[in-house]
Image 1: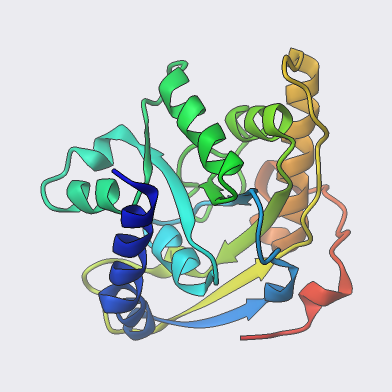
Image 2 (image 1 turned 90 degrees about the vertical axis):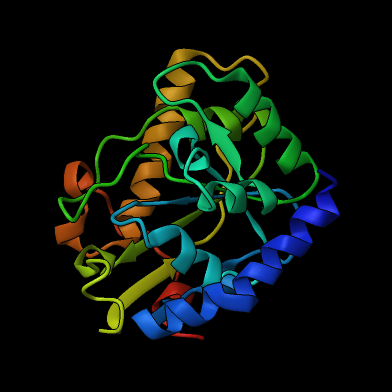
Length: 229
């Protein structure tokens, strides 16, 4: 499908119903939004607590996000079609999915925001899990900057019971940073970049949410300490 059609369906869904459902379900405290670059390829790297994380981050992002999502979601009737129409990239987990990698690199070359959860699965409120190498690999191979994002509060959302409870959710955007560039990154380079990405995310989270990255230093810019909406 043409990219402009993906963009059209993306914003049609975001503003047609997505944003309003998120507004009914949550109240959101968003910080550091001015750290989001207005254009150019960008990797949005966030922690992951709940199925509601992607739609909430989509609702608070001023730019279209091309999400990488597990293949199983695309197989769900109706919802799977929405994933396709909005341009999400299916990923076959637990294997080297070269097609997904190529599509992700293409999205970054087109100047899109690529949405990724480096943990690879939901933490469920138990703190950050060790990062998987995929995010770092893409950042190294493309040279795209990484935008670290922290989200918490969504671990309390239990659907459908909490649909209209307006759960308080916190979102913090950190400063974009680069992990360098290498067309053929070595294993140790990927490991170091993964560690850096995860620590940047951890630094934006409350100490009790940092999990295995509990010793991460809080090197967050002052901009992320000031609320904006």
